[in-house]
Length: 541
Ligand code: NA7
Image 1 (tube, rainbow, N blue to C red):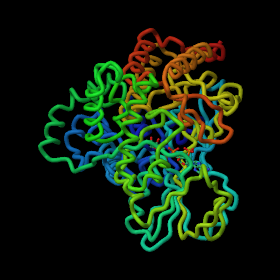
Image 2: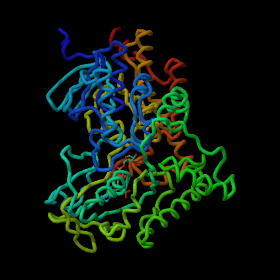
Image 3: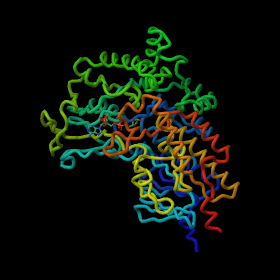
Image 4: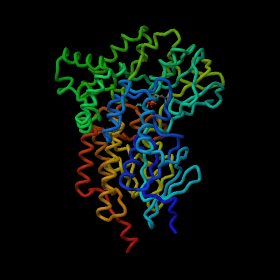
């Protein structure tokens, strides 16, 4: 007797932006869908990253779903760059509007999933001792969700409050009068530091690598502006979908070195005043040509020297290890200015490395700094971490960890050879992390849903990426990345932030528009590179 109760058409792992939309879209196809989410509620990244100052670096009017015209007309963003709590409210609103919570088991982490060749189904196990089966497995586990807690000697002996920005507690955290240490100066650290500095007695920033950051120039959105955006949403979304970054912005029509110095400065001034990481895209050749990149880098470095009063500190805050934009440029609110405060100290770990964490603080080679609170803003095991933490087994019991031991290998970022009827959303090989994650998630999920329509129309029961197609896509991604400056940075794009992780440039750098065209072409060519019903036919025979 089939166990109807625990048998689904699809299991979706994750209730973040991608998972919620996947549940909605698959249900709209009439499928029985079960979602699992390790957190107690919806939101994914925006559920966990509650640290002070957490804010999206894509403009709120673009970082929102486009699939529901009524939703985008009824929802009104309050600020240019939405703060974490507003995005979480928005995702809760979407979940209510489309009754998405009812598909989920919350506070339930998927621990294992294995594919059975005979039945053509996935068996999914959770840490709540649930076992369900499903024909399709959709992994919307997030690219920045597996936190990275570096193994620093004595870490667990710290007697004060200890937090990771990516797993921030729900209770209010008070900084007033406290001596706070922050390890890490990526986007999370750079957003956290100025907010904490406002009330803490002292903030000690432990910086290993400085980062480029551009002021957000965040502001409330006036009603007339909102009305204009809403009236123009169809065109705004159309331009976003065909763009590289998933927003309706385009770079200067000419390269940075094709214009004269005055024009270059005028354009950089414009983007600097406009604010935000899109500065990285002022000119089309900024991340492909080092000389072009140098012009942008020198412009921003001069700004850092203006913003930070102490020239010696300013020099230490200027990156010297990567071209600008090859790590995501941070969008900040008062980061560099924070170093002008009496209560903020910069510890340069390149000069004085951390030797240990003690119960009372952090010891570097030049001494112990006593702390009441230590914040790890040390990032994530990005893109693959949340997948490799699940014991995923495809055909013949082969694990994903083995399949990816030399680095992740996908076809279009969506499918893995040897793992039939399994789809990854925003996986390695997809452009998502270099673009607007909401529109990329929509593109992935829409493509998956159309693919399932195709399987139904052709009475196929399984679909799987061929090994050849995977090899070719990996080569395409590598060749694209090699033609840019991106591999020059020790970034999480490359897995370089996690000791022992294979160094493979994971995102597809060609941009969302081009990627969409490739995916559409694959589909209209009868899902070129995929094998339909290979083993199922043998089993039936
Ligand atoms: P990131 O960008 O990976 O930044 C992590 C920071 O933590 C970075 O400055 C790291 O320095 C630092 N780090 C990591 N491990 C250590 C150790 N062991 N010691 C000292 N410092 C360390 O993560 P975020 O959370 O800030 O941002 C992730 C993305 O979220 C961001 O790109 C946006 O897209 C949104 P390192 O550079 O490795 O020397």
